Image (cartoon, rainbow, N blue to C red):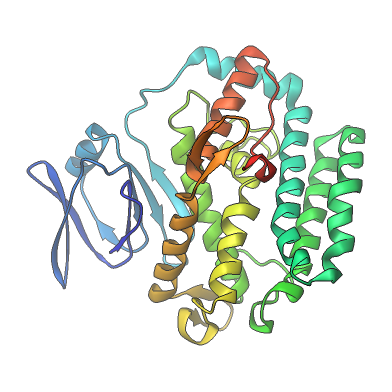
Length: 336
């Protein structure tokens, strides 16, 4: 069982989760682990874990969110505590904003993706990767010119896809040959870099779900991604601007410092490739460290973590749909 930030527990081995008096217990072949519940906010169940309805009641009373994953590391669902932060007024205004003002909000998300990728890659340009410059120039000069001219969301999504495609092409200049991405494959990932991207994106997606939970926003009403009956698409929207800063910086760090290695940290079969348990441990630890990294925010004039920045983006979006205040997702350049 992996520890990380004091509010999150990742359980990676099979076992049984239960309640003993007013604390959680996890039982497996190695014995019993007692989990203090006072500071716990999230559980990640990354293997086959047995639990019962009595425990769900206890978790709900303790206001703990539980994220479930399958063998392939695919996100399968979230258990929400009893909805205490719902607001019909906010939901109606959020739906109205989606119907009447979707494109400008979606444009803001894509603009933030481009700006934050530029910030991440500029580090490598400064340290000698001059071949990145054409892509950096395109992100900084051409993309901001293109965004105001776009009139439809599908056209915007095409530009977003092009931004990510070109980003992946730069991996051959940044990462060792074993981690070069020839093309993005998700379900299931087919090589080590796709496995890292899929796992990292999924962890960020679920972190964003937990942060949106603290607001009155409806998880299913989104702006960049199509609203869907089968997923929390607003979490996809809000997590996009943070992917370069959290997921990809974590990948670049663990790969280039050889904390993650192809020969040690992946299970490879005929048509898929997954992080093994030691690999997940290394990646989760590195990603939690980045999520909890504290910095001075220039606009807010206070210290916050990346995890808190996700929650503030949700609050900014809520304020936009309720009060009409301008909405700009988190930009790395706002760090001091």
